[in-house]
Length: 156
Image (cartoon, rainbow, N blue to C red; front, side, top):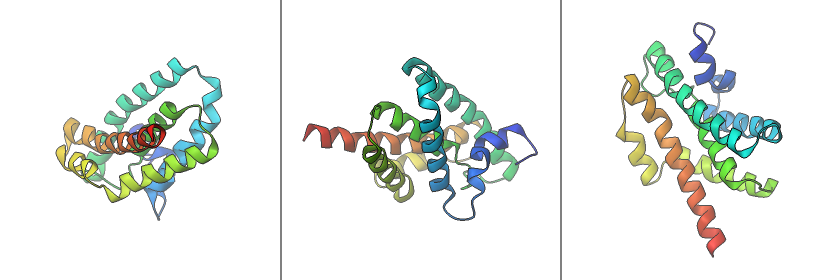
């Protein structure tokens, strides 16, 4: 983690080094960091943070995956972080129970990879910029699926 600054980002500042369920730990880190910081930024600033974190994340994931020589290492959790930030941003303001349900749905879609998430996970496999984008892409699809469930629930 200390060999390159990109590793700090890609590994979620250490969350991805969890020996068990690093994706879940990374998503928890995302939730806690969002909860702690959301009141300090306007909605426009929050959206800008997500966009910038996504762009920096592609670079960080590229560097980290290449240095680990694994195309999509489980220790890289920045994809969970920015995707779950997007979920929380779209749902804001949301109660704790809504955020908890969003967490559970997002983890389901990210871990089980049903339908469109599995498709997205296979679309950009490999190294380089394409592979790095792919690391984030399937998590954004999982975020979309999570938000789609909320949209269906609210419409019903």
